[in-house]
Image 1 (tube, one colour):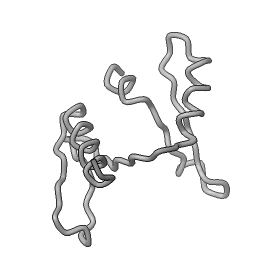
Image 2: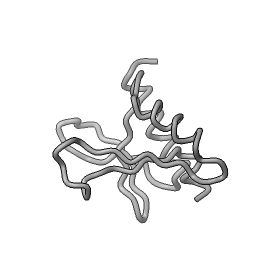
Image 3: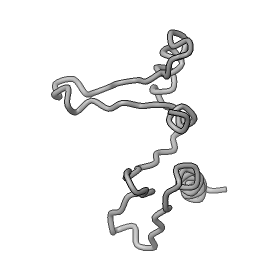
Length: 94
């Protein structure tokens, strides 16, 4: 499986789990989201390494029965630009 088909397969699985539509496009010069639902627009990123995974593991160690969430932002940006991340399985239950 090449990188492109792996990413597209991931997008399709996420669309299925979120009850959304996988936006397929033939022309990659045209910008479009990967998945859309009634309430969300989702951009899927498939990477070999991601620091976020380490941060989430740390947060899960503290969470107990609560839902772990990681909030991150770039230095110098306003807090309103911070991003909150959940594991998909926690998001589905929440």
